[in-house]
Amino acid sequence: MSNIADLIEAYILRQLATQQDGKVELRRTDIADEISCAPSQISYVLSTRFTQDKGFVVESRRGLGGFIRIVQVPVKNMVYEDMLAAIKPDTELPVVQSMIKYLLQHEMITGREASLMMQFVVSIFQSDSITDKERVRMLKTMLLTLENFS
Image (cartoon, rainbow, N blue to C red; front, side):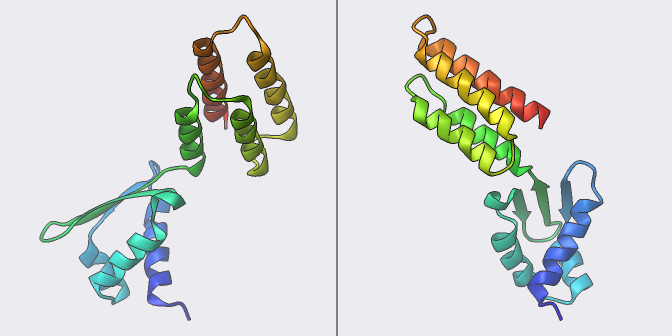
């Protein structure tokens, strides 16, 4: 038999699954009534199982008319956003290569794509005619293109 936390998580995930946009607004009292649990148990589940690291953004308002808004953010998007933010004019080749390796290890790109990206990255870092600003723009464009096609 599942514990209360598992039941609460499953309930919230079912509610999210019914939404096309990956966001749901729920009331704590409705969840508590449905599962026969205390609102504090719902808070516990939200703080441990619906975290940003796991691809969720939770907004919570307590009291009368209070609600819980849960938005599921695709983890892939968060990875690309972090990588885009990390690329700066002083970013060095090994850092970008480790990003490509990360994408490959987490099956966000294929081996063939990783090989092509590595060749491209090495070429733009070795080029004397490409400025730091142009290199940043090219690397970010490459990542944005990947994000849009994945």
